[in-house]
Image (cartoon, rainbow, N blue to C red; front, side):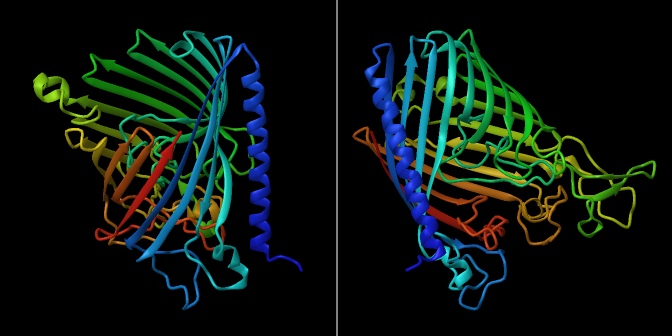
Amino acid sequence: MRRPVGERKNMKGRILGCALAAVFLASCFCFAENQDVTVKTTGSAALEAGQIVNGEYVGAPMTPDNPLTATKGWQERFLFLFGTDAVFKEHIRLIINIEGKIAFAYPQAKESDYMTTQAPSYVFSPIQVEGCYNLGDSEKPWLQVGMGFFPYKFNPDARNLGEFHFRSGTYPPYIITDFNHCYGRLLGLRVSSTLFENFRQDLLFTSETLMFPTQDYSLSYFAHYSLAGFMDVGAGISLAHFFPIGNKDFSSAVKSDEVGDRYTTENGDTSFYDFKAIKPSIMLAFDLKKILPSIIANVLSKDDFRLYGEACVTGWENFENYDTSKISYYANRMDRTLLMAGFNIPTFKVLDILSLEVEYYSKKYPNSFRNVIEMNVATPYSNYRGDLYPWYYSIYAKKTFLDKFSIVGQIARDHMRPYCPVSKIAEREESLKKLGDWWWVLSFIVSM
């Protein structure tokens, strides 16, 4: 009997996952047999479950059995991670971290065309597969050159909101968040240098993997400086999508009047929006424990009493449309400026961390990448709604038991989008659009 499409896809996922696991374990065994190699292994498993208390689903039109709402929408996934960190003769380092995911779709449609949503999806993906060459101590090299797929975190304190630089678009300026995965995932080259133990620099040449147009390369530079452990400051800038190596025909907007992607310059010429942008970011953090009496500071957790913030302009250049009969999509830089502030509330070691984060993003347009995915254009999705609210918040808490077990919880109005493996009905906009929209999620984690 021929299996349903959804079941066949899941079977392929299981086979691919088993194959990856076999190759991975074999490589670990080979490393362990080599006396010149030092190997560390890591692993974890997490069950995540939560609910959208109030929200909205805007995906493709559904039947009456699948209403256009995300309210009371149950969210659940199981994640497991297995990794190895191998150092060869102190200078050559190979890091491999593979993540497996069992995820449930929202919405779960009853139509036969969407039956994939009725069964869990089995997804295997790399978190980090990177080869590095170190100069200096292998644990803290003063210079490191890396190549591959790797996570990058600009703001070390950000738990949910923020970390904008590699989780946002340019034109249009959409934002993406993912519970307990507050970092960018980059493919390309990295050169990192740590000087004087308090100044770090990163030069990145990376290929776009998050969203269309993929394979565009960006050149980025970041610097972080720590002052006596009290203040941390960071700044970075990217020439985003400046090198359209892979998709030269698609890296500029498709020239179509139907989507309004052209604008008239001051001298009357017609130009087209594209994805290229100069993208600056800054971050600032203060460890307020440093100014407290030692008798109080000693009873606080390591991350307690930290105040931090972040700002990112997703595209520095303005494009004002001098043809008044058309919309000026990008005439105001503040509409593309993302702001976040956070504070780690003291819990006196009752919790590992309890953070409160707030974000402000001018809501000229919905946070949507619909035009990017469906039309391959840089024009924003112009389905404006006057009730969109520009303020977001997140309350994040974590507690670890016996060094191996953790519980992570979050209550937020962030930029979440429910998972759906079927592109035709997958959500392009964030689900929590209004002031009263929010969701909660819990994660139970065990680590090696």
